[in-house]
Image 1 (cartoon, rainbow, N blue to C red):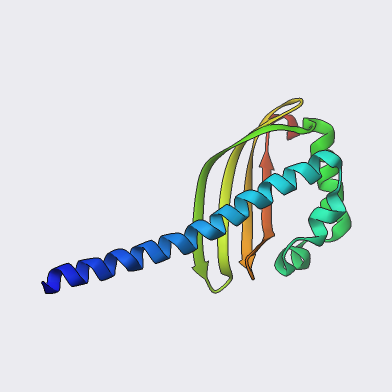
Image 2: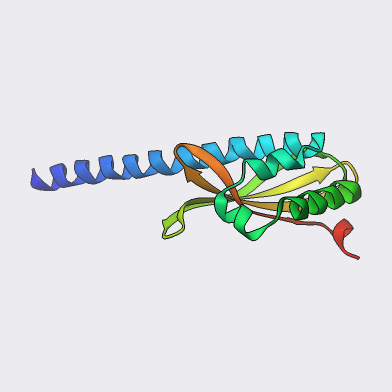
Length: 137
């Protein structure tokens, strides 16, 4: 009987952990959709405004706007994006979700990696990487 009780307790702990992980991952996925919408609209300043403090400490507003403008000039608007992987980890930096995407832009394809910090049930941009042959000089 003790084994069944321990197994049941372990099961509920596992469900609780997965529920917490899934919630942050879902928030980050929603944030990617918002990022793409704002990217397509050229609202780069809003992307910066809603980013994490760590992102803002590492990147100036004008720097991000210039980078995203160049990316949009070369690749065009996001046409579709398919999530290829995700990772959710908690450490000294906080609750971090990493999402990777294969992306079809108007002018070609690429990949994106988003890192979001989950703070008070909100996904804040922590890091962003984009890669495409069209971005190579």
